Image (tube, rainbow, N blue to C red; front, side, top):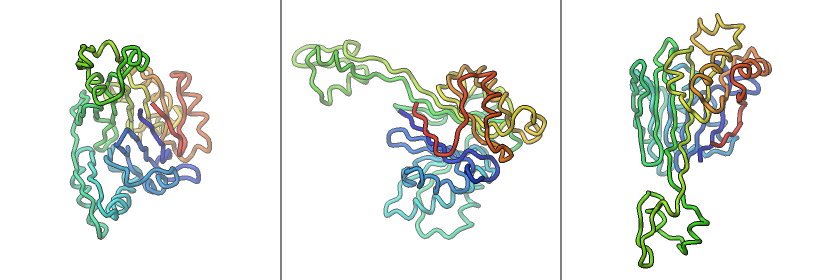
Length: 302
């Protein structure tokens, strides 16, 4: 199961109620940050998330409101006696920008940091990391600077049907792992087929569209997402302003969700001009009813 915590839902500057962009995804032993704006580690502290639980940072682009919290977070993690390795992914120029960032402060304890640049081609969804349990994908967004969106996919898997297990007289033990892998086993002198005692859990998908205007790649990346998190800086009556700054408005975010056949849309990255975001949510719901607006410290389980 995935759990998402919104650590910041404002756009360029923090407000009294909203910090700048940061989303924490917890999946088993993985702690994945989707962007890391100023103040993210403080937000993690308030949310009860150990800052040392971060294993990966997925940077959408290098505008300050999406990355200015990274250096402080790395220093905190590096202060641990045995800091774990962090993988940082980002668009073209990420290695150069990380090198520059690390020169701005003195690090007494350095975390082991692996930096990977992602350069998906136009019209492509790139699968850039894969394990037995999950995969990470990305696609190029349209924002005037190198920018990418991300998807986290928990793969389809088998699980044990406890009632069938009891009916067949199978006790708990390491033999169940083989059944979960779809392998038949020998148990007390008889063959137990995996299909006799397991059921399939379908894949789950989370997609994240950071700063972008409407583009084909956004829809491609979000295809069949169980949850689509999308920026929605303005309402559509400020469409010209959104287009000028390469941002989505709430109507266009909803249309992407609809075209991608996503199941749920969560809007975030709101302009500080909005004292409430009711207008944006109501507009999006006209085009995609299963829409909600995120708020700081909101948690969603998938």
